[in-house]
Structures are given as C-alpha cells and as structure tokens.
Image (tube, rainbow, N blue to C red; front, top):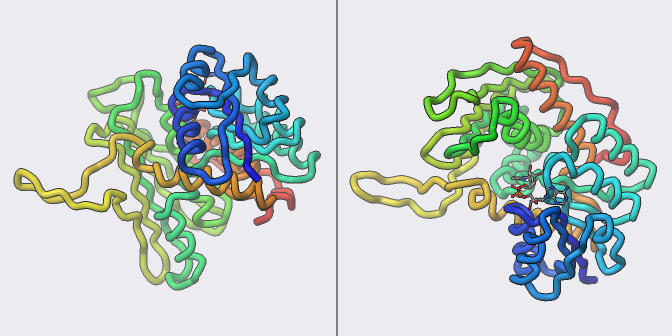
Length: 334
Ligand SMILES: NC(=O)c1ccc[n+]([C@@H]2O[C@H](COP(=O)([O-])OP(=O)(O)OC[C@H]3O[C@@H](n4cnc5c(N)ncnc54)[C@H](O)[C@@H]3O)[C@@H](O)[C@H]2O)c1
C-alpha cells in the first residue's frame, strides 16, 4: 500500500520532510501541501510533481486522497492540526513540540485514548539516530550494568536572534529530555537549571546547564550552548556500572590539514541528523502500513512538554523543582 501524505507547513523542516518522503522512503508519496504563506506551498508544488495545493489545513486533512499528515508549521499551530487529524482518523507525524502547552498535550492524549489507538508520532528524530539506538540496545543488553550518569552536550553554531534563555531550554534541551527518556526508559523526578554567563555574541540569552534526576536516581546533565561558534555539536556519554559509552562523531572521515588532524563539525542539525530524519520517515510509513506505531508517542510529547516547562520554572526560581507527570495510560506501554 502506498501512503499518500499531506504536508502542513512548507518552511525549512517541511521542505526537508517533502524531499525525504519523495525521494528516500519506499511506499510513500507526497500528494498535497499547505502553508499559511500560500506562496511557499506553491513554490514547493512547482519543484515537485503531482502536488495539490490546499487553501487551508482543514481542507488538506479532509482530502480523501490524503492518508496521513506531516505537521511542520509553527509550534503554536501543532495541537489544532493534530486534533483534527485524530478526529479524521488519520496518522500524523507532528514536528516537535506536540503542542504549545501541557494542557494542549493532555487534550491530544485524551483524544487519542478516546479514539482507541495511536495515530500520533512526534518528530523527536533522535530516537532514530543510529548512535542513540546503539546506546539504547547496548544498555538493554545488560552488558554495561545499570546506568548512573548521562552527560549531554548540545551546541549550536550561532542561534537566531529570537532565541532567548527560555527557548534555549524549550527548543534545544527538550531534544535531550526526550532522548534521555528513550535511552533510560524511565521518567524524570526533578530538575535544576544553572545559567552560565552570556557569550559576548548575545546578551539576550545565556548558555544553560540542566541537571535532571530520574525516578531511579540516574543523573542527566545537559549543557546547552546556543552560540558555540565552531559548529553544531551534539555529544552524549552514558556512564554505567561496568563501563561507559559515548556517541561517536558522525563524519566518517578524518581530515588532516594545516597542522591539524580531526573531524569536520556539522553546520547544523539537518546535516548532523540527516540519517535520523530519513529513518524516522521510513519508520513512520512502515508503522502506518503495518499498524504497529513507533517513535515518540503523544504521551512522550506530553512528558517532554511537562519536563521542559518544569525546567523553565526551575530557571526562574533557581530551585531544584519536582516534575509531576500523570500516570501513563496503557495505550502507551511499549
Ligand atoms: N525536529 C527538529 O529537529 C526540528 C528542528 C527545527 C524545527 N523544528 C520544528 O519544526 C517546525 C517548523 O520549523 P521550521 O524551522 O521549518 O520553521 P519555518 O518558519 O521555516 O517554517 C514554518 C512554516 O510553517 C508556516 N506556518 C506557520 N504557521 C502556520 C499555520 N498556522 N498553518 C500553516 N502553516 C503555517 C510558515 O509560513 C512557514 O512556511 C517548528 O514547530 C519547529 O519547532 C523541529
């Protein structure tokens, strides 16, 4: 069965999703697009063949030729489109965040529970990155014993002007929050945030250091440096009872030039996680075809949201702050 996909939001991420679905995923075909800025949808349709441009997201979701939907529009529009997809009984891959508030995430979870099966996958693509998948598989094999620390580093070359200290946590650290839950398979109990001094490049945001404690007592540290200058760099080391494992640099060549030997550092997340985005799309289409959902669920989207908003509270209060999640419904048991 070929899955016909409709895309809402034809900006940076939407254009990448379109290219991946059209060229790299067997069994998928992009058939329809929509963007609040119509010219963007039309220009994408002019570059790819066979695309219908819809005037509204509602029309795209209702289109009988659209079997499944990718939501890559602005953050605060996600929840409404995801709820409309659930009402229409259509699978949806929603870019992170699932919604712009914890309440909206709860509403989506409630709608999915009422529908009776999982339709929502959240675009936390790191769950498909080969490095993180190997770390999770190795941890699950038991060969390294129990986890003790997870150290995460998330550095951007230079963040856009609109990025504030809050967004450093809500937009960047949230990826670590989701992937830590994926690796460790447990929830967080508390969070503390320490701000470092601002780089001379931006006075409106500070690098942040987030310390998360899981229910079982694993300590997760996250350094987020929005203006690291040298490139986009994501690191992860999981320290366990009987050893540790770290993400290896992704480039598979060593460069020697002008007295230096080393790896090239990626410019941004799209190249660093290119494999993860492609594998995420392949897994989403396969999940639709087989009826076996995968990836980050609506519940994971809710958990990431609660964790990120509690971290924002901790940033303001400068206090260690408890994280409270509701009990996970059986629909989301792995
Ligand atoms: N998974 C990741 O690693 C990752 C990385 C970057 C961005 N994102 C998320 O992806 C989404 C898109 O980000 P982007 O960088 O492509 O932004 P962008 O601004 O380049 O693109 C967003 C597009 O959506 C359109 N749009 C905005 N509101 C809309 C609405 N209500 N209905 C229809 N179209 C609307 C805009 O006109 C624009 O073309 C955001 O939610 C962002 O947080 C995820």
